[in-house]
Length: 311
Image (spheres, one colour):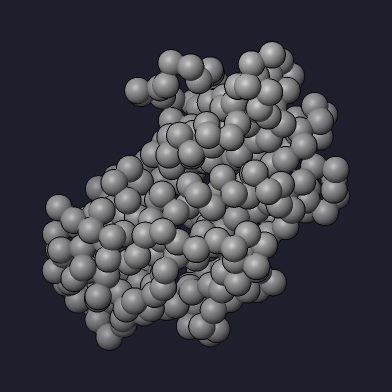
């Protein structure tokens, strides 16, 4: 048996996205990587097996049964709002439930689920740095992301119910980088950036390469638990806009919220008006538990993360 065949096997669900490709490259140092996604994987390394299937299908179950991965990393969520709310919810929640069932049935030893710090919600009463025990309150004022709260809750419950599967749920701060296309990166890439008049909350960021490293370390160490993952620090929103080359445009909320609501309903904006709270109120987290478990330290500073978005 070759050295490569001696390695454990890691299946990355959602491998075709920017974060998935970065993780596949990083994990290939220590694992045999198998990729799965609903969409094609462009520029796939020829040595890496890839299956273009939906997590909700019987075909995906057949892949897990045949490949028998030692670890699965779940990045296969719909995080944008371009499709229907029903499709997003079904993929994220029912798809995650099916994946959890397969992990239990086919003896997957390690599972890493990528959640988000947004599940805590952006609320005026938030403490400065929330730990992993803080309630997940995002759907209170932002019902469009209740699916992210539910899948996080599903994975956490699974972790306690089935300890034989070493399950980790990571809740990272917003990620910036050349390959990412999340809502915060899209927001900061605009030349004129909408802000709420009278608000300038502290925000946290991390570089996409650092998140790939955090995910890889979680798999390699076989961590079990819920972990916030933070980057090199936090800055006021207006500083982030300046550092990424944008110009803030301040509007009063009574103008901005109904305007954004109409643009979203007509398909002219990809983010619901509930997202406004994340540029009004703090949603900062403590990453101390993950640091204690792994010794993780970001390789990229905030300036490098911001530079990766500059036009």
